[in-house]
Image (cartoon, rainbow, N blue to C red):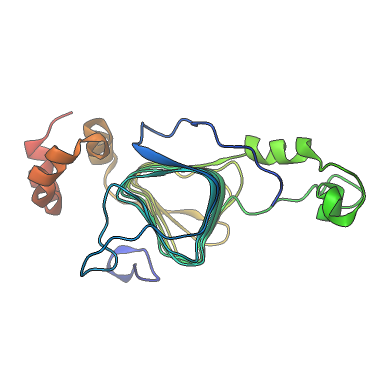
Length: 247
């Protein structure tokens, strides 16, 4: 995945994650506790994927649900997240308290739901909520961490997030959207919208709205594997695809 996503250049104690609703159902493998060992596939292609997630040995996945045909790149940290089928993250990424749909392309150094601090308190340092780490109390401030969970990030299906982009707490990104490299997304992004900048702002629609609405109605991301295998070549031609498949 290139650095520019525009076409033509344009730690607290965390409980086991219960199944959290994604934009649609995902066939997934729950990962409870820490998972640092990779899931290898003996194949000539080291990134050949399968129904078991391919997790780099340097990645850490904790209390999350990881879908089929997924790849988690090196030095990535995923906590309390649902990660949909066929999605991948290239590496050096941090994802926490998030739902990522199917067929998402996350470049390296992406951050979903970065750490937040209690700016309303006298002290905004994390010593006020990671109290055990500093010996201030026998327990941490679980209300604060629940507040973090209540501001989860939601990523739709077929979303491309460029290198180094940051999606702030509570933000939702619609199906088919594109987020430019190094963007900081502070507000929701509509389906099939290209958003860039700091803070991220809509640049243009990826497709005209009627086409975007038709694609959402077709919801190809929910097609079963056998249909995908028989129709994968049809994805290369938008006009032909829309002519062949109706919602």
